[in-house]
Image 1 (cartoon, chains in turn yellow, purple):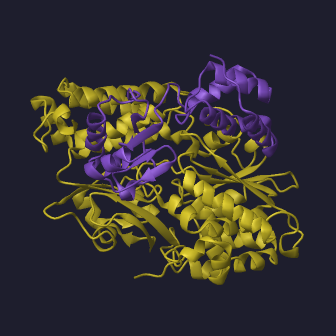
Image 2 (cartoon, rainbow over the protein chains, first blue to last red):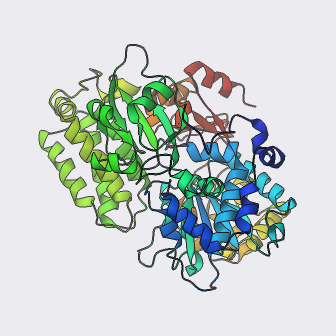
Image 3 (cartoon, rainbow over the protein chains, first blue to last red):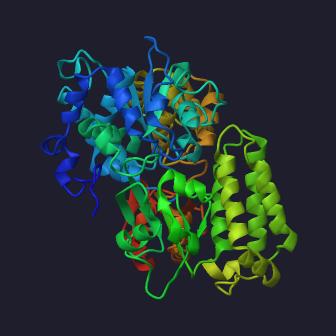
Length: 429
Length: 158
């Protein structure tokens, strides 16, 4: 087993409380960081090559350096909205190690000069929210939050904000709109949040896993952190493995870990008698891969991008040979149609049409030209909207249709699933 | 029928109003408070009651209310059973589970059972993909379900 950074102590129940956390190395790096110069911390994070773990993979240190270099108040916003289908790692991190996130956030806030942070958690996560609220109270009581933290002269306040069920609030400007008390609609960029974010003040939005990783960069130093993973994808990452595998779950492995090993070693392989058919490697927005492609893939940003898909949030969804790809695409088009915020026409209308067309095929009313129509609509949705949801809806469609075209054509011709042999109504009712 | 927040509810909303940088940020938390007091859903009366307490136009609160799926626009049963039907759960039979629950409870999706106890809904990903299929009943997650275990849990809910 490879070395673990974030999850080393996740098996310990005591790691959730402040005492147990401290016993296992907790808040050591906060004390260390508060004695460093903020710029030193930013430089170390930059040198580590840490990339945003929420989905986009943007270099964290670079994001931080977009902040204006003046004394203007700024916010740190932790993105714990975790809505990308297939992803459940942030939930684990908040439930098993709330103080790890809090420590990473205080260090990051000190580095960027922020006196106030929010953890924006998706509303359905009642339990993680209660765990975080308790941990934040513990941190205040221990003098790790509030005024003059550990005698450093640095003040910082932290609070939790509960979302209310909108996928789009995981997009950083949508999240900012939501925190401002509005519909969670994304905003045009530029200005980027680092320049004008929450309440038009400079704001850094980072994912739970990104902020927690900062602790280990301070602990080990950038050079040691870089020993995990590759030149362009350094560090370890949590992968949420789900779907048709024996042992689904969250697994921390170094980046560039072979995808097939994650499925077969960590995940215990396929269920008896079943074969691997396809994998969605980075959350539902990532283009699907065939079993043959999976054999060649490593879990890092550049390998998956080179194969026409993406690492995304690290949600690996495994699909076996008993599944109908037309049916699965119907699940995804329904999701994106439901979650489009309605602001941009190509997305609002496009997601609706994609969903209608796939479902008309599923209901046996499809025409062969509908397959091309799907591709045409999806093509017209890419790169034409304020945020990436439209692309996220288009990419699965294009990849499903091109890689599993025979299943779509069979369904149109026969009015039933090639794999299941049955109609849509017979499949699920 | 008009709706008024309880004294405790007003206190909670006022706490939320002073908790954040702007009072608009208190709209979502306050809608949660009001929804709970109105038996799990929100209507115009609830919006107007909040508008008065918060001193924010009802139209602004309404706009937020309509955008987020966790605020119910219709009455729901005492137990709101939300079955995730997104991809990882669908790969593990969640749609069949959702249909099974409806059949057993003799209801249709998004309707309240005649005894007022249940509303069954199909919902999008709840971040429980490694323990599929799953359902959320009110605030709680129930994971790794079978048709039998789900029905046993639901029948035992008081």
